[in-house]
Length: 354
Image (cartoon, rainbow, N blue to C red; front, top):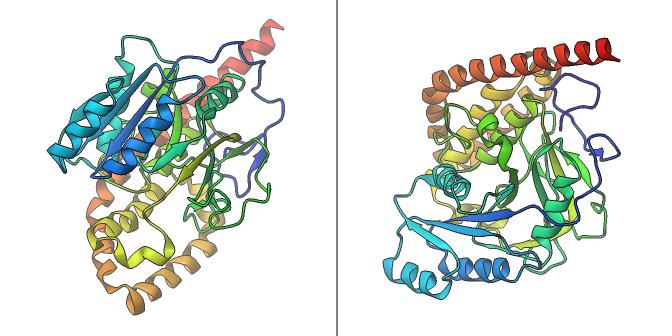
């Protein structure tokens, strides 16, 4: 979350309640929105996700599915069952590559869209999810990205109530695995939104993209969502959590299932943590958080040495990707400073005309 009263790019250590800042009265009708899903073999989940989209009280104007060609037969069965969606088969480009293609296809839809909702196939939306989230974003022009309250399959356990960056900078889903007791029932600004159910303001997609990529395709999978949200906040935008938009997230990666995740996939998650840190962390916050960063990394290295030795290779992966991440850091920093300068000039002009 961008700290109130601080320069864009500062990173908060706690959420901030949404008050009147950046709010306006919602329009009587929700803005047009579309939905996109990146599917990698989860055809049963995909069917349930599409059913929930078709059952929305304010249905999406367009639905796009990018499938990684795991099964032609099952893909065709789902495609024929949901004729209201546009399907595309292609190579496995990771979540980042698939999501970028989904967003671009939705932006070229016959009906102009104001918002795009990206979903994992294992997410099932409550019937008013889309309408509630669209209205929340319409009421707050500062929100570039938004998410709702995600619950686990039992409907009582929290999966994610938005994401925060602790001082050690390892992103954390708020409330994950806690019983939902209403502790996250306030609309709030947060640090990031889970890519499992992330709504984007279409008008800002080009501004948020870096060299034509909304999600960094070098990440392939994991942390591309938090990387995007961190960059959005560096550029002066905000990320909204709206608890009235509720969905169920089955979530394949859970703590007790870690060993079931392929090593190659976990290596992406491991390395991408460092890449997003290099790309987005400001020098001031790096110095301020250095003791927590060092402490966390020592614990992490100890865990790898004792319990997860295949992850040593992820350090090598991160090191090899470091020059490109550092180059992108320079681009992000330059654009963030440009936006800050434009904002300062605008405030001077506003004062001169008052």
